Image (tube, rainbow, N blue to C red):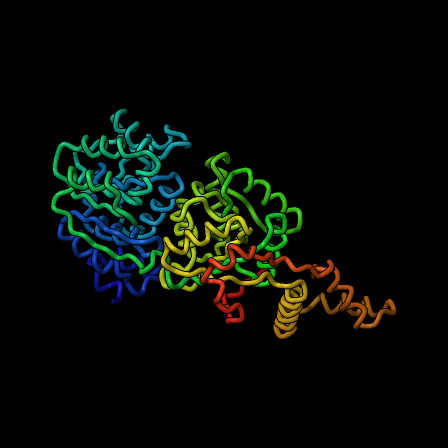
Length: 464
């Protein structure tokens, strides 16, 4: 269904056109009309299904621009997610003159947030702790509030925000429309729904098997000591424009960042010990493609909303099955194809099996590319780049420099070879098979090893 078929406001439609929205997603088709009718909703959907727009569009339809007080409150589990969602709300509402959105969260200057709120804001996006603080300071006033959104509600419960959520909801002393979005509905959430929501309509848009069919999932059996080299070979072979690499701990993120930086990769890192301003700057640069590889922990990356990640790489198998689902949900979003690679040591195979059981999908075992394959890809990429420059015809001063080199008595072939040596870093190390083997007693238990490793595998190639 065309997105304009579910939108009433021309200014919202204009903004969505600017953002490249054409087809509405299933969650948008089902949720927007219900929200516009004023009904409460319990929406179950996976990451990357377009649910932010599903509640933002009707919120903007309902805002009274003459009232300069909070009319919609959106609660989220992390600072990063609060920033991402507030930016999305601003983009969708950018042509609605007079509508102001403010993000409030811990780890940032509360005085700046207070000043923005006092200037007048109809939409507040924030984390529970900071929202409670600002309500207690009487900076956030709830008298004009008519919509509350609990987004990523299951994650808020996992992070210990149940009491905060209930406190916020109980502070509203008049009927409001409540919208709850979550991938799962645990018992604690059912109690919140029963206590605070009014006859909610259930909107369920969950992918079969939890993980998206658009994400091609693979794992590589490799010794832990070989993982950095294996990761480098995968990146060099598949040349993603943007790759998101997950580690299980902050220390592992720091170590991998140092190792990849040392061998020349354009990467950065985010985890909980890095200052909030630096994390947001890193996310912004990754979003713009200025960083090609982002290394992250699960908690720090929970709020990521990056639409063009080609590959998610699990440098370590996650400790929890749902962490795996959230990780690979960062690619293959909104119908685009994506890929997930997991580097697993022999002792991590049990975790792979648990993930397969949890997601109800096999993860295909594949082999780490050889050094020859990596160099072949580099050669092909370099040749394509040179041919493209030649065909552009805009060589100018470069031709003059080439002539000067030839005047010094060097032939063209030697000059080209020297330039290639300077520009392209081929792997000259001795060929070494990085693929580990599963001990016999474990191998017999794995049904997914029967999948052939010779199937073709494609992802979008980017620049490196």
